[in-house]
Image 1 (cartoon, helix red, strand yellow):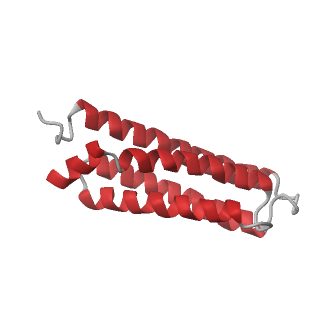
Image 2: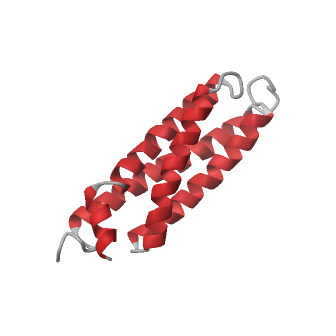
Length: 137
């Protein structure tokens, strides 16, 4: 067994870490949408932008989890898409946090936490272990 094997302990550990980060991202996203639903009568806290962004983030997190699972199974396409999606979502989160007034502070904090989880995904997925693995598959 070489380090460029899907079943190598380092590879399995890397994908386990990615799945944990993505699961945290999905969990935070679902909790945010649940909080928005619970606070729906407070239109100063739950704006239309919160509903739109919250729904898109849950969908994105679900797709990210699907890609992580498929990449762990050896799909090069899923690996490539996971690399791209994690980077794009980090950039979108930075923009959301930076733009004043569009989103309430509580959602910007939640997005920051999602960004940290996605940063973890990006670091691991772009690390030497997985890049080398998918270069040789």
